[in-house]
Image 1: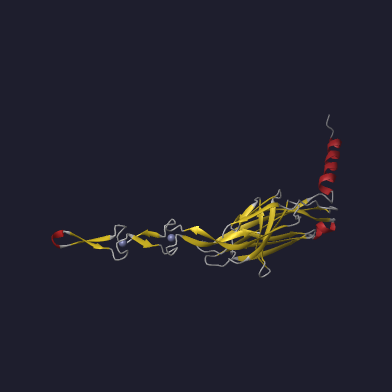
Image 2: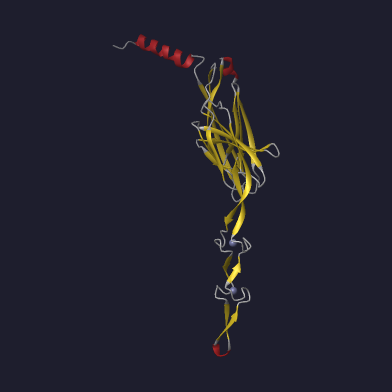
Length: 273
Ligand SMILES: [Zn+2]
Ligand SMILES: [Zn+2]
């Protein structure tokens, strides 16, 4: 039999355990929307969210975060500490259409943990491509932070936090022939605490590639005579008059302008070291 006093008592116990427990986990949800008009150059935006004072007074700290992105917005960098969350997001150059996107951030706060487990560093780093490297790695973190350092200048060229993926392509800027680069990737789950970094190096040399314009032939069909080597015009009494095509000298072929008649072109090549 249910008895009213018992039910009230149960509710009170639930309230104590789930609502009044000062160290129960709590969540803070925020989102930031950005947009750029047509013709605008790429732009970065920084956001910092501090631990609410009343949570700090209850002895809570940030213990995790989850993120989602939509639109064109990308994440360059993030940092979760016990007392604040920092994120730097970026919109690409808006060329033909406006660029916009949103980041949704859920921060979780609770009792401070003595030690927060971090994942192992990513493995199997692979890089390939020409001027825009494509990067790949293996790991089990839902969030991977990748950075690309130019070893000649010592500066960071590009950095991204990749969500739910283990590969990405450099989506802004490019690497240059003769350049030497180091790239690094680290990973985390919803704790927001990153593993150590795994690094790899590459340089950019050149390679010969078959010309895509002439399919490696070094020549294309003469556009003036359509490959016949002669031009036809109307002579007296509508009789056709054939003349040697002056564009191709009767060969029916034109030298390919893209490869300068070589049939191949020199393109940048990423060479892992
Ligand atoms: Zn060609
Ligand atoms: Zn011709």
